[in-house]
Amino acid sequence: MTDIKSMLPEELAEYMVTIGQPKYRANQIFRWLHTVGVGFDGMTDISKSLRDKLKESCFVPDVSVAAKQVSAIDGTVKYLFRLYDDEYIESVFMRYHHGNTLCISTQAGCRMGCKFCASTLKGLKRNLLAAEMISQIQAAEKDTGERVSGVVLMGMGEPLDNYDNVLKFLRLVNHPKGLNIGHRHISLSTCGLVNNIRRLAEEKLQITLSVSLHAPNDELRQSIMPIANKYSVDELLQACRDYEKITGRRTSFEYALISGVTDTTALADELGKKLKGSLCHVNLIPVNEIKERSYKTASRAAAAAFIKVLEGYGITATVRRKLGSDISAACGQLRDEHESLVN
Ligand code: SAH
Image (cartoon, rainbow, N blue to C red; front, side, top):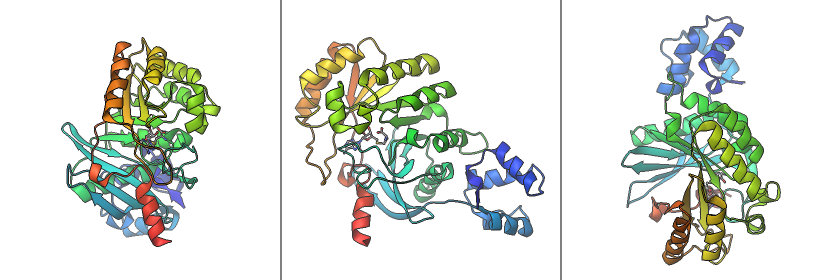
């Protein structure tokens, strides 16, 4: 079966030709799939015979809401979505004064193995299709009745470990005939696959690259993130500097504050020395505690002291504003809870 929702209009036009249809059908079908978000049955300006033909050879990999939690504090909505093959992923809908942002998943599960992360506990199930990334946005818009104007690829999975589908998603979501969300309103978060950061730079997209650094040196980083055995901190930072040079976009770094592990002022000092002179921004994330691990979150005082040290090096750092703290669950926790209920 062909996944036509993951095709750009020009690819869909080629596909139409292969099934004996005029190219212009592609525009109609793309609009139905990407702006209206309906399946074949809802395509009212397409003949019944063509709809039947499409149903025989194509599929639309939609997502459906399996569960959701709504924050009573700020209206943040956390979704558990079911995929067509009964895999589960999560998305989080966040309201900011400048608009609504959706945090989407790029893989079901993850194989990166970061020690503090719930998404990776059961490994990688599969890569998401580009269409399934689009469908998360459409499902959240449909459920909330509100428009999503920003997207962060920070949910389950490692976007750069699903490079081709993520790149296709970035082109689809930005398409004027589709959801038309500007690349400047999109952030991609990676644990640091240096080879693919370099590939992405060459695409020259105006998205924000957000790098999960979490430690200023190799020894500490290797103890919490297996990817650090493959790429050193220095190699990673060099790739970020090159990314900035090629795209003109400044990188942001995520740094999880784990009490007694990553949150000391000595480490802040080391980080300050490494990042000094760059235009980056550091997002400090007090680690979300997950029950499978013993990591404890950093205190406010430790976070404040960490920021002060970084500022001494001219680096701006903020503690990530915590939305939905009452439904707070680190990435992957909702899925894990769901699986332990159904299994
Ligand atoms: N794989 C990508 C994107 C998904 S994770 C990446 O690594 O960047 C999104 C962010 O959440 C990453 O910075 C990740 O390190 C962080 N994260 C994962 N588990 C966390 C936890 N328990 N507490 C705080 N941040 C966490």
